[in-house]
Image 1 (cartoon, helix red, strand yellow):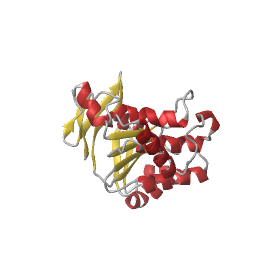
Image 2 (cartoon, helix red, strand yellow):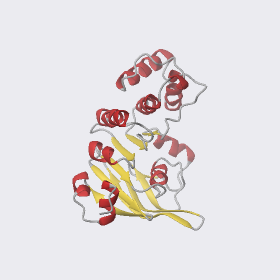
Image 3 (cartoon, rainbow, N blue to C red):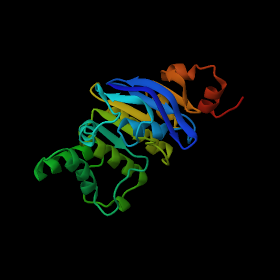
Image 4 (cartoon, helix red, strand yellow):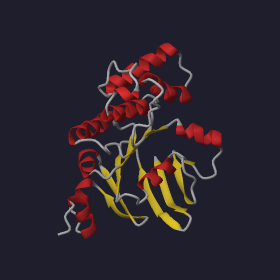
Length: 241
């Protein structure tokens, strides 16, 4: 389980997160929504220690990330994978080499096992046979799926998705949403930062909405849909009236 307890973060005088608390359990697919710049990505970067906690705490499987040694943080990070907004593939490496970087960072399996694992995760995201291509040779949607394949290669307990459908057309958005559902299980938890309402209703079983540094909604997608809050209704529909 991930527990976020009274998390506070500021950059200079600007408060980004103010007293944020929530839990994520195995089997959950939590969508974190809100306007651009509201702190969604800042929040999930606290969950794998990419950003240092100002106040409050993040507890992963009973391990506090506050003032943790580098080695202990690395041990916890082995349970966590992050899918970055634009795939974050290295242009100078092949698809296979990009995925192998993740595998090399968490295990010492031999090359034969590594090759087998890479083929398995590419098949899982419907990208068989592209391991020797360069990132420049595949589409934006395919890069996103390679990013998910790379995340899955390390058998994570927690998967963090940072705007996984940004910049995609509706068809590729549907493919990514379906893929997130397909690779989720009762033994994993997915946390999806998104501004795509379609992703919320297609994927999530829990939703958090951030506004002005605070949580203004916590509940199910159906509860979000039924909300009487004018701002939430505007955010969902895009219509003020």
